[in-house]
Length: 71
Ligand SMILES: [Zn+2]
Image (cartoon, rainbow, N blue to C red; front, side):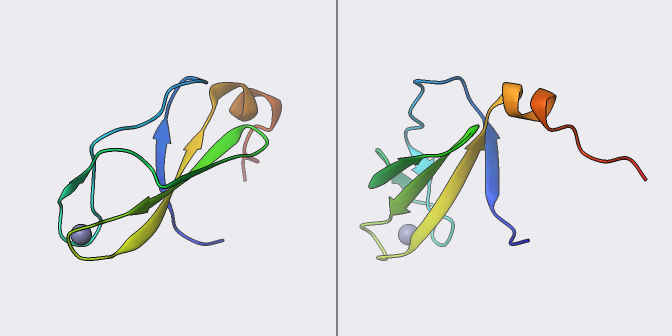
C-alpha cells in the first residue's frame, strides 16, 4: 500500500489552498478531481515549483462499510 495524504471531508467539499507538499505554497484548487468508491482523489499541481502530488479524501460511510480488520 502506498502512503498518501488523507483528509476527512464531506461529499461536495473541494479542498482549497492546500499547501504544496514540496515548497509549502498554497494551491488555490486541485488540478483534477477523480471520484472513487468512498473516496475522492485530488491531483494538485504547484505553480511555484511544478511539483505534482495526489491527496485522497476518505469518507466516513466507507469506514463503516469496510471496518479495518483487528488482529
Ligand atoms: Zn511547490
